[in-house]
Length: 312
Image (tube, rainbow, N blue to C red; front, top):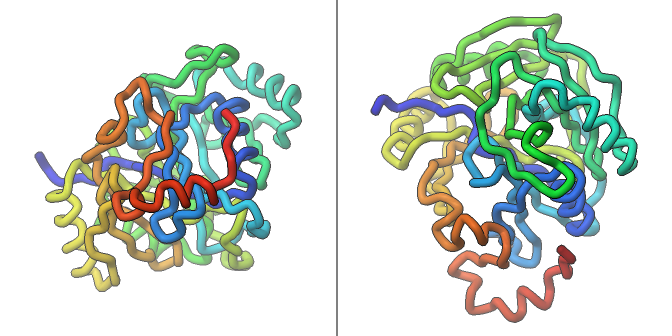
């Protein structure tokens, strides 16, 4: 199989209170908690994974929820918007639901010929629900209140805010195989034809913008998807040849990761499909148990005592 970047794998953000974060994404937005684990570098902090029914790459939004985290600031040098795909005709449902739950949302509008509804999570993370031009066939997670005809499918795009879009566009096109599809004002849309969904990166060029501050309510990094470790190594070599510093392969239990900063300062990750989220839980049990990296398993009792209690 030809080595390709298969769109987005996951996006990782920072939150404040863990319970509030869990309640919003599972109970208000109706996403599935695919995995409940801990931060590899700080095992007293949760790492939540929210996604679709199967935890498929391109649907996974993860969080490091720090209860006393300061509020961050969106700005240049970071991913500043996450766009979720929803079915045609569902935006009215979501407006009513946001009213019901006191969600801060804006006026429905249109961008690149697609209707969208902007909103924020409780920490101020910027999100949009988008009705894509093409039908999204991904299998959503259904709840008692949110059925398949309105449920969130997964990522449609992520937007990066940058002083100058050209250097980052060079990485997207020359290394990752994306192409410039269209432009509206200072917003440039890049897309890969390697996958049908989670295939879009928008760049918002803002030469006079202020730098972002990475804390609660902002995105930490975005991860691009590859099939396996061989494909990952192929792209690692390309990135090194292009003059970037990149980490070695890191085992994240559910995927293998490489990290580097693109020219605009956004932290990029390349993550594999393998081994996947069912390596330590069945599909039916996903997200039901606290899963710990092997190096922390001996300290489970202490870690469980220190982690904030999560009511589900």
